[in-house]
Image (cartoon, rainbow, N blue to C red; front, top):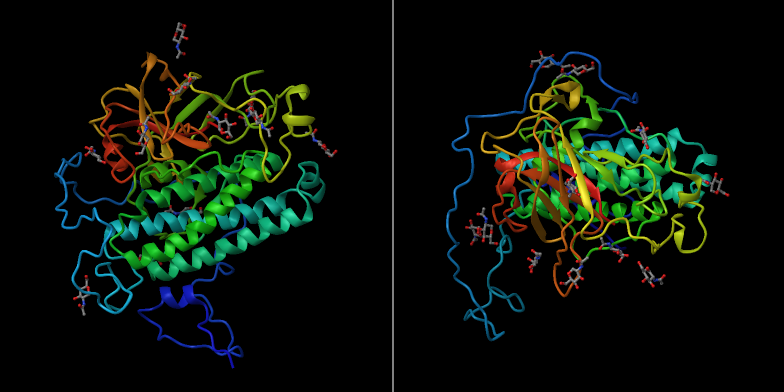
Length: 461
Ligand SMILES: *[C@@H]1O[C@H](CO)[C@@H](O)[C@H](O)[C@H]1NC(C)=O
Ligand SMILES: *[C@@H]1O[C@H](CO)[C@@H](O)[C@H](O)[C@H]1NC(C)=O
Ligand SMILES: *[C@@H]1O[C@H](CO)[C@@H](O)[C@H](O)[C@H]1NC(C)=O
Ligand SMILES: *[C@@H]1O[C@H](CO)[C@@H](O)[C@H](O)[C@H]1NC(C)=O
Ligand SMILES: *[C@@H]1O[C@H](CO)[C@@H](O)[C@H](O)[C@H]1NC(C)=O
Ligand SMILES: *[C@@H]1O[C@H](CO)[C@@H](O)[C@H](O)[C@H]1NC(C)=O
Ligand SMILES: *[C@@H]1O[C@H](CO)[C@@H](O)[C@H](O)[C@H]1NC(C)=O
Ligand SMILES: *[C@@H]1O[C@H](CO)[C@@H](O)[C@H](O)[C@H]1NC(C)=O
Ligand SMILES: *[C@@H]1O[C@H](CO)[C@@H](O)[C@H](O)[C@H]1NC(C)=O
Ligand SMILES: *[C@@H]1O[C@H](CO)[C@@H](O)[C@H](O)[C@H]1NC(C)=O
Ligand SMILES: *[C@@H]1O[C@H](CO)[C@@H](O)[C@H](O)[C@H]1NC(C)=O
């Protein structure tokens, strides 16, 4: 007999409620706390009602920005590679570490920061579950075949949807009774390639939004489970890039972004949520548009009419000259689904002028139009385009700023991570900001009080 520990994630998330059980191969599966099959409307489209509540969840703020608090007290250094402590807790376990001393793991939020971050992640998992199913249901077999996607590829999309049911169950279990249910969504695509490209972009900010807060959670237990689901999401993002004919991973590091950036990008696609759905505390910044987005449906992205992309930058594959369509192009111009595609003409390059337009504060957005765009009073002027990619945040001064037209331009920077690796590649984030505080991946959110508008996703490569 080979007993095994069943449904690790479900049990882990339920640790507070369920005893540890060892299942035999004859045991049935443990049902989820919140089944994705019994929630979630199946309709789609925009919302045209009046919200019954408005604005983010809030409590009185104690400051407008986080003041510098100095360096942490560091009590450990190791310059000789040897064990520095004089003992080990047990053989082969070096001294130190968190949560390894026998304390029972508690897989639940430990603060409002945790609760709000994990709830945002659940909003994201629900839309992914709906989106992948919706794409499969909306387009015909012929549509998919014309876009180069086979029955095997469609099964993979279906499997990715199933993964989302698991992720939504995990997060619902972690959050408890007030976990938000599935909502109703409004999508910005009309073709298979636009659907695939939207999936590539939505999973980018889903993944990056989690990397932005993962290491900041008070609940290390929740962080561990969430990482195990977001690692799957990272693979989904790469697969959608491959389906999109893009180079699968043109970066050395995956980028993280603050929660309010992810929420700003996600909210426009949630048209309504059921009554009493748990609300979020994150900010919706004014929208940002790149007026000349690099277009992955083109062989030469520099030819033809410039195409605007707002927020998540949905692909617009209409109005591309037949001779510049890359899907069925020959040779190195081809962008059909593939394990790896090397574009003969890169989508963007350092020195490329990037033109912006931004939206206003006070605009209704998100579920039931019940959230409102805002910026901090500290964001007094648009001064920089902040390019956030890989490990880097680079501020480029805006030029040609028009406060009357809400437009400005900046030049794509030539920045690198290490050893000359170009940092601005893949699907990256740009925000317009008023000030340029030095931020690094673990304190990126300190820029939030200075965000004028955005982020927008920029299809750098
Ligand atoms: C284990 O570590 C936690 C947190 O670091 C601490 O609160 C707890 O007292 C420790 N337990 C034991 C048995 O040392
Ligand atoms: C690409 O080729 C496929 C198969 O030949 C065809 O069905 C499809 O319409 C073509 N798509 C475009 C955009 O030319
Ligand atoms: C949002 O709209 C839906 C559908 O009209 C409605 O059932 C729900 O109560 C609304 N929720 C809020 C918070 O207004
Ligand atoms: C929403 O919450 C209110 C107040 O708790 C309650 O009276 C109402 O029945 C709830 N509506 C739904 C649809 O759950
Ligand atoms: C797509 O781009 C064309 C211009 O190239 C524009 O006319 C059209 O409105 C755009 N469609 C959407 C949905 O934005
Ligand atoms: C890939 O594209 C680059 C130009 O972007 C070119 O230098 C290189 O030779 C190409 N490699 C292959 C294998 O096609
Ligand atoms: C992004 O990476 C691809 C693949 O390595 C490369 O061909 C392209 O030139 C890069 N783009 C930029 C903007 O660095
Ligand atoms: C970017 O910087 C690198 C390293 O300084 C340099 O070799 C390269 O020519 C620069 N590229 C552009 C387009 O300026
Ligand atoms: C700013 O405007 C000037 C004059 O129209 C133009 O030459 C320049 O290219 C613009 N800069 C950018 C980055 O677009
Ligand atoms: C990008 O980030 C890496 C790692 O922090 C750093 O070494 C590098 O200098 C940064 N590059 C730029 C242009 O800021
Ligand atoms: C962010 O962290 C870096 C160190 O990685 C530090 O130099 C910088 O001052 C911090 N930024 C702010 C705004 O506190």
